[in-house]
Image (cartoon, rainbow, N blue to C red):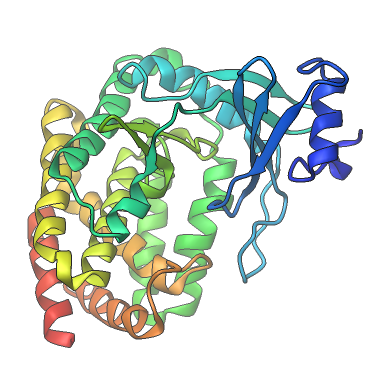
Length: 344
């Protein structure tokens, strides 16, 4: 079957693919369930007669968002490389095991995370917030960055190509938003240049609660197709954006979310204390957080759980902060929270 005609979300097509690739026997019963949540890939859970449970992932050329957004589906092979390396950098059990990487059909297979597990984004949106989860989230990001930095001579050449980060993050988040938001254009243009110039550590590029499954109170990180050697503070700002936006969206749980996002920041900082980018937390760390906070309400991929009223409020608050940039991460958190409350 040709790559452009394979759709693993179709049960019969997926079954035929697994048989032809030698992963299943003809006539073997295979349970097939498409998984929801992603915009960039088709993802399905398959269960074999012998009890094996795999997740198959097939990258899409056109992402499933309202605006036109395209990226080369060969990025799934970057994800496969990321899984191999992150399995060595992250704490044991934090990254699913890669089973195969099919470069012809742009499909990878990985071991499914054991049941029972839950998606951390869903838990947060339901108000089930544990401080320990935020600490683990920060420590996981710190381990990836600091352990990758220690192996920089080996890993930098492997992840030097930033094409997928450009098409999936720089363009849809920063460039697209800069073209639409004149009051933030200069800020974002400078941030783009600084991001491209920073080559310090492995940068996941999609470090978000939606990509974390919680298994026995430990995080398991998914979706590694944007990984590259770049600016680790992008990951920090990207992650904080999700926590701050949920703080905004869930007023009944703001106290818990405030402690959680500060705990995430504390755990990350403790992990990377001796790394060179720590001195830039109050600069690029702040600016990446502001850039992502704006992009997630004005870029190609707005946060789906924020209604228009909250998107507009977040937009206006962040634009004001961009024009009077906070001097530290903690100052940013305090001012964002204060101004959101004042605008309600």
